[in-house]
Length: 364
Ligand SMILES: Nc1nc2c(ncn2[C@@H]2O[C@H](COP(=O)(O)OP(=O)(O)OP(=O)(O)O)[C@@H](O)[C@H]2O)c(=O)[nH]1
Ligand SMILES: [Mg+2]
Image (tube, protein in one colour):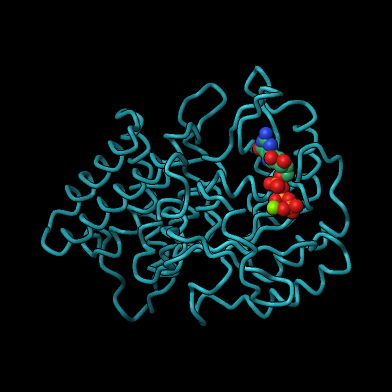
């Protein structure tokens, strides 16, 4: 499999991480003092950062807390939000960050969480500059709006919403282009309840390189996002199993049907809807396959085999399976729907087609 990218339907690809995978998830914490970085990490990973001590300096401006008993490394950069120090920090980071193809994956920084307190009215220009520079180093940056409570209607309170909208308007180079709102711990005084950690965990999985996803999963608190991860793993296993069977079976249609219904069942996609969506996916897979083959085959070669011939290749099954996992996962979350709640076939067609074409192309 080629390395996966940031396609919206790519979340199902986590299982491809098995070949090369990080044993430890290293996360860089950024944000002003008091922004809630330690509180967030403690809740998200069920650790006690204060108890891990001051950490080991890895450069002049970067400290690493290796959390005992957890596949987690927390990089801290105290005072980095202050303008003058940020360019020095970026210098340190540049030295530290290596591409995913070189260096020890376990020593690399895999992601930055930039925390902004929801009570703040604005992001300081130095903070904005730091976010842009860190992102330019190739590090996925997740913007976290901390202490952003929900009101009685289950939506962000007005001030938190306004801060989130303002952050989005800055068009920062952060994951999904927006801030992820959380309250890390309940507040008995104000009655604010913890929320947003599951969604943040999902966003981290999305933003992470595939090789890092299983370390993230092993590092997060038991209470965070377990169910969706378990589903994704099971779906991944179903795809791998089908790919294995592709070696021995000659009936590609039957194999596909089995794969599709198994994954749909794991995500509990209602069967009528699964059939409708699967029909679209399979039709598009056939078309996209022939389009990319025609483009890549030399005219003298006599053309590629038909889709039915090649579909029993494990690689083809894995591609279709991965796309299908993404579709089911999106459906299970209530995505890919028109405002009246029915399946948005137009949108599905568009997303899947792009995804498939790209995947077939990178395969050839
Ligand atoms: N109730 C509640 N309090 C929070 C939350 N997040 C942060 N706090 C409080 O806000 C204060 C600052 O949070 P920290 O997590 O220490 O902030 P920090 O970004 O690590 O600050 P520095 O270590 O100084 O850079 C602490 O008193 C926390 O208890 C939250 O989600 N809920
Ligand atoms: Mg702290």
